[in-house]
Amino acid sequence: MYRENLQKNLRAVRRKRKLTQQVAADFLNIQQCTLSKYENGKLEPDVETICKMALFYGVSTDWLFGIENVDR
Image (cartoon, rainbow, N blue to C red; front, side, top):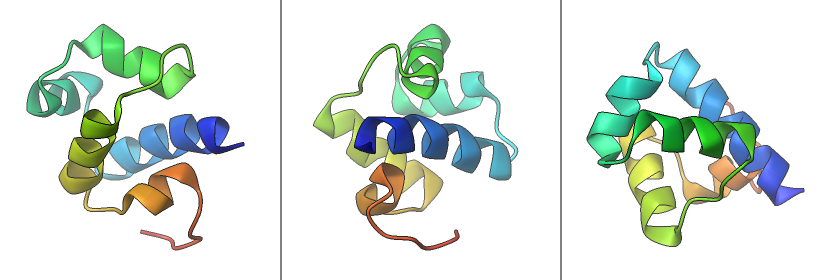
């Protein structure tokens, strides 16, 4: 359940911010293909990367996992 929420929310918040995968990947210091795999559920980010993503997108880690239902 949380894995599906993570991939869905990562893609949704990036698109809402009108960012390309490359821009987000550059900030996170990862490859664009790695971010794509996170968004498609083929790979799971480590805790440090999840925290960086939350800070970059301005959301909580709980929101990324779908634990809190707040529209950001």
